[in-house]
Length: 256
Image (cartoon, rainbow, N blue to C red; front, side, top):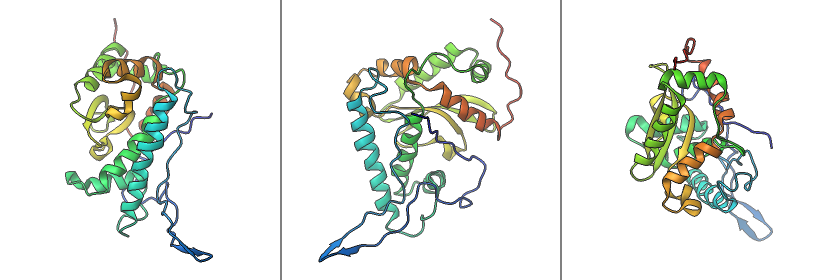
């Protein structure tokens, strides 16, 4: 199946975009003698860019059925219910909604569901069948420039994941101001776009992401993600798009 990546426009200001995930407002209607209540689909549940069994044996079909089909769906449904109660947030793209509801560090009630929808869309696209191995050349050079070596990056990413207390996410991001890649970890639903970082990869460290396949063995889950699941193809495309907005200069490969 062709990979359909979540590509974010990092340059446009809030309210300058049209709603990308949205459906139209729908009212209840009568069918025969029955009143049918309609659930308004402002934002949709995006399908992962592969079949649900394509990541096996590293992530089981059952795990994806529960994680994507239940947890992710609940975030979408709950977000639509929240947005449907007010006109204030109608018409936002998902990026805009996450930033607006973060509310400069004082999150609105809609933030958690909005951020979790964004985070999960991005997470599914951060993996691919036959993933893992090494990044493509250009991205590898940038990683080596910013972390010293790919091994250092990997150790930093894994350590961040395993040291995260409670639920949250681990990210490879491009820092706009520093003009460099960095690993960041966020608690609960926080998404680094609220700090103006540009996400390149993410890993879900909520318990529901790994418990069905790995129980409480987070180390094996993280190692498997890095060895067999991470999509460096997706990361390379995201990095190329990010570089259109952040001038990184020429990566300098460290001399061994």
